[in-house]
Image (cartoon, rainbow over all chains, first blue to last red; front, top):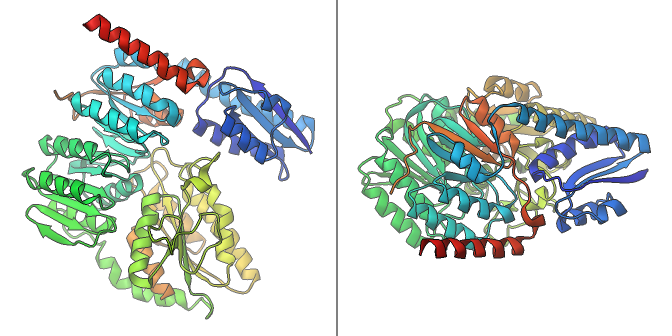
Length: 513
Length: 63
């Protein structure tokens, strides 16, 4: 094998584009080879060094240089992979440049040229993002800040500036919003309607808004705040702004708020604000223990309950989500018949962080302590890369899995190895997974998951046993991936597919109990 | 002062992932992509100093 690095000086590309490119190019260098395309920052060079992909040319690269690194059987194979990488990059930028008036060279130029209300989506590396967001806010642009690794201090300063100027600054780490019917970031195709949502979590928002859509409701606006907004330090600055905008919006008749339980003073302020909006509100404190109606505010516990409550308030009658629970014990009984005595644990492998969190809560209620890389209980907290312990739920979007790799919602194949490993554990009864569709997500996520499941079941058959695969598709029936087709792909390999993450988690618990 | 957003004609400005530009365009919404380059060779400290100088200049002009 040879190691070859080619350095392209002064060529910036964002890391997500390069991560996707890396996984495509790695396929060009055969099963024993490897490839990565990265900017030459200190951290990236360290990643390449650890992966055994760095050569002297790469070692000499600077942060503004692009490194193509290959481990290949021959020089010719590395060159072919390099040519493929170049072709992908060139065709991408040529396509964008060929479209008239779509490229600007600076934030200022873009803001000047943009007509009507201005909504910016920023997914730059975190250390440079705050600086550009400040310029955008000063140019009166609303902002969705997708990037993470933005400091708390910058977040507070940017949100204060936004509030002062009457703007939205959603994020950092805000993955999803739907504004005026346009999906931003990871978003879904939705009908417009009277339900307005403000959420501190991306996949939590996607699960609620798609369930509302799939069962006949409609969304006026769906806004995000970023997960840190409701901490004591940020104090819910953007949540307050979002609630105010939804309260004032004549097309929003019901206001929905989704977040993990905020710190008490922040929660108290938020509830006081909601009590005065003159519209019904649904609040989901995911992981909270409240379930009650306080004046105009309906407090619920799961994402599915949030969607059901909002649908009921919007007058959409007869949604079958709750009725589906009646059939779960029978399905569980049938599934359990496939298992042997030693198979007793649930292993959840999630691309969506909030879906992992919701699954952990539902499983905990029914099975007791769930080990997880996102557990708040130090006795149950495990490192994501450690072996699973008893019942385990993993958030595969966690940093431990994503350094130098794309997020699993963009590249779900990253789950493959772990899925087979968990399925082959003789104590595993259920492998519980999520599949996300919509803008920004993989073009065929269920296809990827189905291949993994088929591979695992083949190996299990050789070992003379089976495992129950339980899934739910977090997506709208109108997403471009085709919701029904995605479900069919999962069912075709023997997976049980349910209509929500809450149902899938409940079934998993019933099977393992 | 509120900057109107809801149900106004809207242009999306994209900085970063080209895939997000594609999906906004695919929905038929106007979108401008900023061809962003790493400034000052990626030196964040130098950028902070330059920005601070720029802000001081602006403040002086407005005084």
